[in-house]
Amino acid sequence: MDDAAKQIGVIEAAKTKLAAAGVHTVIAQFVDIHGAAKGKYIPLAHLDDVLGAGAGFAGPSIWGTGLPRNGARSEFYGQGDLSTLQPLPWMPGYARIICNGVVDGKPFDGCSRRLLLRQIARLQAHGWTLNVGIEPEFFLVNKDENGRPIPCTKDDQAKPSYDLKALARVRDVLHRMETGLSACGFDIFQIGHEDASGQYELNYHYSDALKAADNFILFKMAASHIAEDAGLIFSLMPKPFADRPGSGLHLHLSLTDAQGNAVMADKADSHGLSKIGRECIAGMLAHSPALAGFHAPSVNSYKRLVVGRSLSGTTWAPAHIAWGYNNRTTVLRVVAGRLEFRLTDGSSNIYAALASTIAAMLDGVEQQMSPPVPIDEDVYEWDDKEFKRRRLKTLPQTLGEALQAVAADTTLTKLLGEDYVAEYLVTKTPEWIDYCRSVSDWEYKRYLTWP
Image 1 (cartoon, helix red, strand yellow):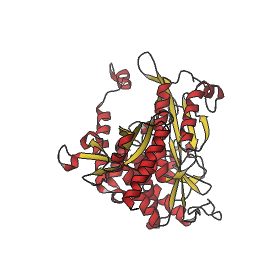
Image 2 (cartoon, one colour; image 1 turned 30 degrees about the horizontal axis):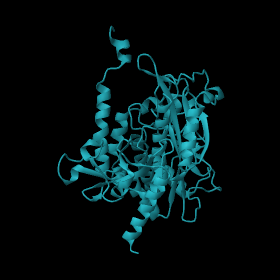
Image 3 (cartoon, helix red, strand yellow; image 1 turned 30 degrees about the vertical axis):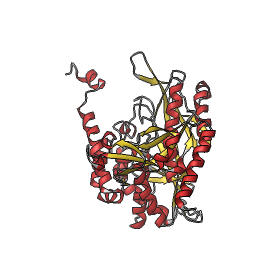
Image 4 (cartoon, helix red, strand yellow; image 1 turned 90 degrees about the vertical axis):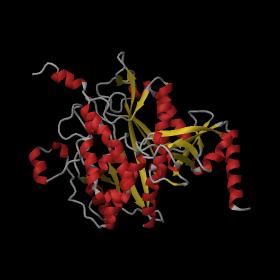
């Protein structure tokens, strides 16, 4: 039997299995440059089309493709990855398949998933695998009589952290998320209440970088659908309420070699890190200003990453480019021979965030960079004089600054691909300009009759 016949057999077997499970429709899903899930419904009988040429889309209608309105390159095709095909328990009758971008019959470099695959290939050249644990923090939100968002009305606590009463009131929503995602292969090990009313965190075990990214998109799809069914809004907005803590998307990163050995860990080191681990830290810190543009890519991201006083009264968000052992007040926390990158939030494109992370880590390794002296103190307790004395730099404080840092980081741009970064900046810069030129309620209250 030749390869084509084998492939046909595999596809037919997949269709038969899905049909037996009651599936009638496949969602051909990809992400745009913002990381939003996009796609089409494909009748199960036409699964072959998605796995062949792919599902067709008008390229210019998709954020961040930069494709023209006419000609062969005006069409974007989502070509399915058969290994990702699985039913969706929260949508009986439907399955999802993840697609990679194809334009004019060739792999499309503007596809964010392909962006990550290229960086994974660079890791593989070193013989390494990046394992990623993702910690999604999110809000469940209602709207008031004026249509403005408010924390879930079932959950209004003065000190909500770990509150069991609040968890119990939304237990059905959280349990649907748990059971649905578990049926899709997630190993969920805890669900907790975070520091703000209506804010939760769902933790599941790590996987390799590509699967971690694919799973996070599935988590967003599931959580949004299940919350909506319950009359709630699921939100990954980094700082939806000025007077309450924001939401992050912390990334736990570890490298293993072909034998499964930890590459970045060394128990003999004072901070539990190998030379390679320290080089990875050095690369990430060196590129942190530009990484902010990919990991914290919204105007709202920088309401969370504040230096100094926060209107919420407390914050766990990092603002300073530093690292330390089990130090949650720096952008990089080292624990148990792995790195926790605390910059990322849920408004990011997870594929671009992980691709840029790998690029920065490998730049540190390939250039044999040395990290700055670790900081094992609570930097939130420092005053301005101490920051100046230590010469500790801060992360960008606005999206505008972060995008400028992306444009200025020619090394990271080259590693990721100049065309992708250029299109990213073309897409995101108007967002910043629009914000700067808009007039907010705060401005009306402050300036309408002033001075």
